[in-house]
Length: 213
Image 1 (cartoon, rainbow, N blue to C red):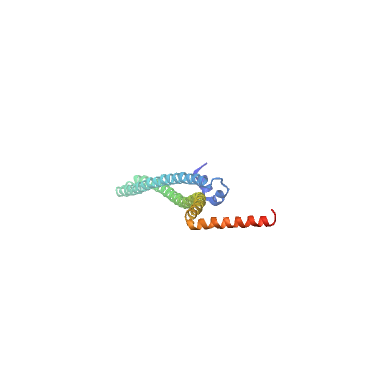
Image 2: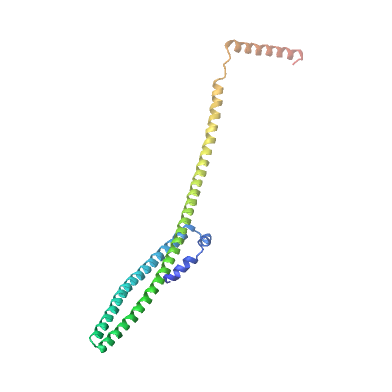
């Protein structure tokens, strides 16, 4: 595919539409950018070659103008010496040189138009490439944010589980501390409890005898 065809394909391409259909948008965008960069290099190389050709033509133009002046001078010199035959030959050569000059001027004009068009294409492609780079940065930032969010979610899941375990441990520790901190009954309280139990037992036995049990 020629550079012009590739350039037109790139310029006419809808980046967003292509990315929407891509399985891996970032990879697709990088491939597109590589194609843009390769095409841009070729466009600049072609433009530079045309500019160099134009410079060579401009040198020839200056040489051709000097040649016209030279034949003009020779014609005048021949006339001054009465050599009309030589003057005619000089004027003929001058005319040929002038025709060659006109062709060079046309070629220079053509190169100027082509160079101008090449510069416009380069500018268009650089804009497109800049847009693609911005799009890539957005995609990479979104991917980074998604990775960070996934990491946070995972971390929160682990932290939540650990937090629940910590709460259980704290509750168990509080129960144990409450048990340890229970006030122990005094000896007097223990004896009174025993005496109260014995009195109730005796009363229960008497009730049993009364009912014949």
